[in-house]
Image (cartoon, rainbow, N blue to C red; front, top):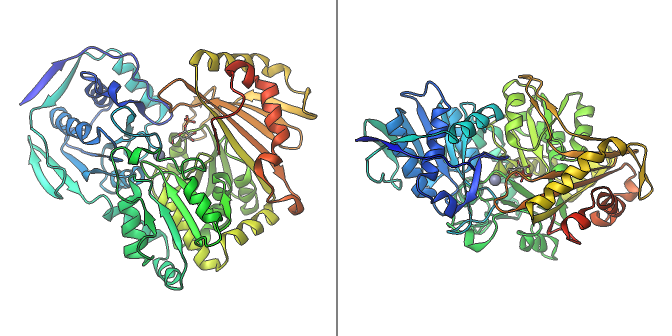
Length: 542
Ligand code: G1P
Ligand code: ZN
């Protein structure tokens, strides 16, 4: 039986950088999830009889929302729902399924690297038929709809069994429960030289992959250990838990410090990696060397042709504005296009669809290619492995040679988390107010060349996105960028991105914070971080 249920709008269902993210208790309010899901469906046209993909990272409340999605998909007239077994699909695997099944779109349930549990974070994101996050035009429409919604439709079908694979009929609609790993692993086999990787592991190459008790566990077990023959135990923390074992499933130097310490230790494996809650981020650490995501993007782009899926070369590279300029130098050398987009994967979709870019990346540990329309943690790991297998060199040597060729972009991000919202806004407003007067002035002995609030003109559809981060550029190419996070669920997070280019190989490989010390001071002088926030140091440095 299909019911139309009267509801009243919530006013806070505005999707952020990556879908709607809230604390679990917010999502558990009466009709909260239903309102948002119906607002998504109401903003779409022509899905009758079509396929919807749904799955999530397995965090607390995942299964409940999947049941709601299925019951509402029946009531709204979808023809089929494809769902990952146990409700599990990594974000890149969901993107792949949407594309492979020619689905109308998909709902991905995740709050990415944010913690999970009854009092932690949850999220819902709509991805369109290209497999990528809904563009701003669509998320604006969803938000507008959520503010006036008065009813949603749902079918009384009882709980669907998510744990057995197979296809069955529910209320006149097909539900297909699929193994979450199979299609994704097949896709990886088309991109990388699995024989070369098997030979690498057979030769004694040792690796550590930390799934952080999140979604990539089953993917890493299957691909690294079963298909590629890496030693059992290569994948750690591989059982997805609803609360990620109480940790932040965030693969950075703070939350994956144990991996970093192991990789810097005397008996370090050859290669270390980790991924986040929903499997789209990556952390790459070679024996004795951490590779920043911005550097990793540049190095993957420079070497991608060594993997079968990219042997024809790259069409172009795209990076988010705050990501370092290391990849720009690679694009220049390769003679291919370089695109600078606002933060958030949704901005890469048009470039990938139009065949203008092949590889994309963000400083926030996201890298991916045109094989899906999301960033992809395991993909980045496999591409690194493929490059290591072909070059037969250590990650550390590859990095040193890369810097010697292109120069090193020293880079760090300083986050000030849970700042009171009005204080953070006051800081940004004050900064905006003085942008015009900054050029020509000097801070910490460095002259400011230009300062602006980044606006993006999408070269494919002509859309313009304004206020995407304040950047202050110094003479000589150093810069600091300031923006407020669009993914947090409490207070505001100020992100400060700091970058300095060093061409001289004699000065490569120094301590990053020391190499950036003058710029770090300059950032505070310019934005008044201490005085506005009352904080004397960042909460997280990556
Ligand atoms: C953060 C990252 C951004 C990434 C997003 C989703 O967004 O900075 O690069 O795309 O998470 O993973 P932010 O919180 O900065 O808005
Ligand atoms: Zn993520």
